[in-house]
Image (cartoon, rainbow, N blue to C red; front, side, top):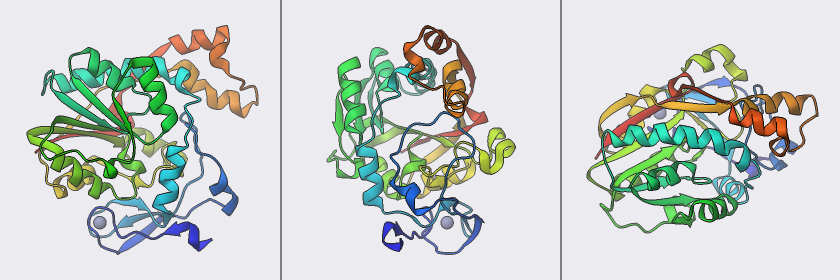
Length: 301
Ligand SMILES: [Zn+2]
């Protein structure tokens, strides 16, 4: 079993001094399961959560080997793309609106762009966009549906020169990365001076996290770093960024996405997105402020 795992020093400050907050509830067999998108499903499987005594970051330790994690993401299928499309496109408008206040119609890189919902909106609004995505399936969807320019690879393997983007975004990506500081340092390198980084990740001090506690849907096998606004600002600062500010945008969820966990629980889940009731429920979009689940921070180089 040990060969499946690797131990990490704190992925922010590098110290190895922590208290255990939550023991893992996973069994060996659970690691064989494919990863899939889940819909706010409370009470998932999760690894051992610890809190760094030095910088307060909450992270999972040990984690599945980084190579295995990357392989899981590269094999991830986009079976849920048609379900999440409506709500993701709604949220993307607000995300792009947020960036426009700071940087208009410039070059933008989205790391972990998934099916390209955010990027397609940014591209339509005048940004010169590029995406990086590990999942071959998601990238194929983004290219086919939206004609986007996407590299299918690990971000660390990309060869962007220094100072080449005006804006770099990471939407719900940092919580998945074994070495988030390394990634953010690379982001710093490829941003132009005065360039903007925007990072959004689940906030373990958010209202929903406090209500649901260990049954919060963001406490899951896939999330191996748990940030707060403060620890997110801290790691960005360690990567070199300055002028950090905490922001909020309008997130969206469809009624269908909220109900899928219930349908699955009742075992009546069979591609509801293809049925009339599923299509109707997917058109019913409920907006909410991103900060009730996530922290979002802007920084500049
Ligand atoms: Zn630390």
